[in-house]
Image (cartoon, rainbow, N blue to C red; front, side, top):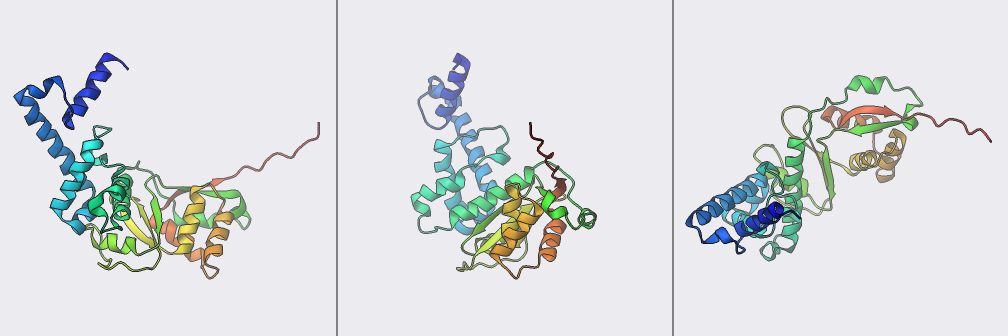
Length: 255
């Protein structure tokens, strides 16, 4: 490590309370307090559903505890807080609210979707262009902003109810599995509650499966799933950017 890098690391540690040669200077305390407030403000802003559920004082206390061990890793404070959900798993005051880490994961998913690259979404016309045999030689490319997860309770519904940028949701947590898809097909992040078949289709897409294999995965989860409606709903939502044809492998010619 270079001397400059070592000094920068020590300075960052000093901001989190460790000893530093500058700590005795009165201006350092002012600077440190300003920096800490910025980190805490950023975390509270980046996790609005957590703040809505627990209150500002609780959220800011948790943010201060997080900041003690996790300084920002990039200059964009809008990205600050990666790992906050995992931190809440081990944070003793969150023990009475075991759903908070999953709520934090969705808040983080919103941030990542919001800051993802701008890419055109797949149009319905592309679906009409697929011929009968295309499903086994075509993949779906997920939109860069697409974030989705599956939960064993109605975490998505609870999360939606605690976000002012979405309508709907309920302030109750039921033992009913749900998934949620977040994406930014245009200017704002949109949310779509997923059933098991839709999540299975997306999850298979994420692993690079063909359309046929995605459909098989969805039907294995729910044999009653209407695949045409399911795929149309995901395309209409903006979950994909394009279809990727799979080039057939050349025939093997014996040596």
